[in-house]
Length: 384
Ligand code: CAA
Ligand code: FAD
Image 1 (tube, rainbow, N blue to C red):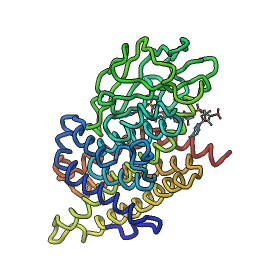
Image 2 (cartoon, protein in one colour):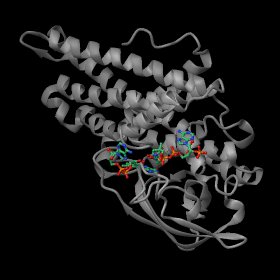
Image 3 (cartoon, helix red, strand yellow):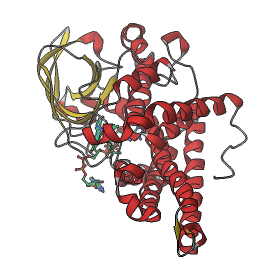
């Protein structure tokens, strides 16, 4: 395997968390992963168990039922889960770094008590609802409206592509309150499943992460109490951006996991499979693919850990998280394509896992900001 996996700031606890996540992924997620991918079934029982193990609210303070760990622990765990099941890891990533983090950082005590605690304990699942049919990268163009009606907001509109869409209980919904103020008029509201006028739309039939639960959501005259707004009036867009800065570290770790999962399978296969009288790794074309994979993964890992460490140290991490996601998602795509090649025809069938990892890799270049959006964030940062 890769020799220099552990920078010296990884503590014994970090290694323990990584090993626990690895063990869980191997024993609990691996057995059903092909079936869940085929049938588009979310790993509900497994997500519940991940909650019991503390993986759904890893960075939340223990006061609110979380595991009180740092971001480095979080990315190590996400990487291990993603090596096996990127559909489970996106549910984990959204719950941890978009929903729990946003609530803990900006919610009121009452909101934390009511909503954060069950999410952090993994008793409930969260969803983050920013994208719309006509507002993806152009996220300030929110068409969903949250009209101020005194003691409640009247929510109307449609959200698209929402991860955990039907399995969630708690939804953070971004919506426009003052169109004349542009992005400064946007709010973020906590919406509960079952509120009158809230309907979960169709499930998306996807190329990859087919075991993740992606839906559109429709809101028609949903009355959301005023106390469910997070932060000041008009803070919703900056809330989304600040939350996504951390979310992108999670997705970078997911991409790293997909790449390292594909690499580990390739390394093993190249030593087992024989062609022309010798194991295929003894053909230099295959050995060089493994060398490229290992090098790229190592570079991606350092960038992911650097972004996580910056967040833990209280440094600015917006650019680093965008760099980590941009780079790790490219490595995930390139590595998984080569992993299928190393496996030959066997790589093209489900049993060998690498075809799924290749399909799963693509989404890491699209969600939580496309690669082009990451370049906008990075270039604005370096040019300012
Ligand atoms: N961190 C902090 N603040 C940020 C920020 C960042 N990364 N990016 C923008 N902002 C702030 C700006 O500073 C600005 O605030 P002020 O007016 O107070 O200065 C405000 O947000 C508006 O920013 P811009 O003027 O730069 O806005 P823009 O219209 O040019 O768009 C963008 C900027 C970076 C393209 C942004 O729209 C964006 O990130 N788009 C992608 C949206 C996205 O990532 N969606 C993901 C949905 S969730 C998801 O996908 C989950 C999942 O799959 C699992
Ligand atoms: P568009 O914004 O229309 O982009 C189309 C193309 O144009 C892309 O290549 C893009 O990079 C490029 N482009 C756009 N603007 C620019 C520009 N200014 N400069 C250069 N290139 C540009 N959203 C949520 O809110 N919550 C979720 O839980 C969630 N989960 C998702 C799960 C899945 C499986 C998928 C597919 C999406 C999910 N999304 C979610 C939505 C995701 O974040 C968006 O799809 C993504 O932000 C891109 O938006 P878009 O699809 O509208 O593409």
